[in-house]
Image (spheres, one colour):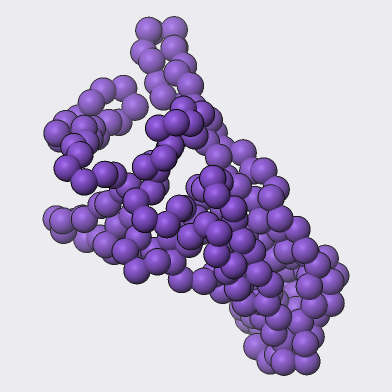
Amino acid sequence: MLKAAFITKVYENGGDFSTDVFSKTYSPYNTYVGLTVPKGDKNRGMLLTDTPHTFDVVTVDEKGNPKAAKNLNVTIHKVSWRWWWDTSADNLSNYSSSQYHEKVFEKIISTNASGKANFQFELKYPEWGRYLVRVEDPNGGHSTAKTMYIDWPGWAGKSRKTDPSAATMLVFSTDKETYNVGENATITFPSSKGSRALVTIENGTEVLKVFG
């Protein structure tokens, strides 16, 4: 439900006008779709490969009451990154990137009289990475989407050494979703025991700080 403000002006012959302001609640859709992504593993918060995961879908009306909806379109896309270096006229090199979506799953589902439905998705090894789950109501027009991370059980990436093409992007995890200025952030990423990492903080044109 949304609340919009409306302004009405009535002009008199002498040029003066009267103004009236009122607000009205309205709903752009008759049906709304919601999606719940399963929780990941305890250590990294990621879903695991070779495991069926259940996703819950709910549909409600404009007042939040359960409502049945037919033929919801469920799609899952792998979100991959491509990157390259750009050189400008003043000889400054910048790191550029873009992402593309590859559809890996599609299914049509319908919610029951309680407005509930679910579906299962299982990603097979050796696939891994970041995925976008999207549920669309083609009849009502509303859609919802969430991002999830899927990785191998145990230490992520330990077998990727044999597949150079898979070494695209590390998946990072943080101990909190948001931070205040001055707070310390704990950031983790897949690694093997006893390994070291070189971390740099950059602004696109120069390296600001290096940690080793």
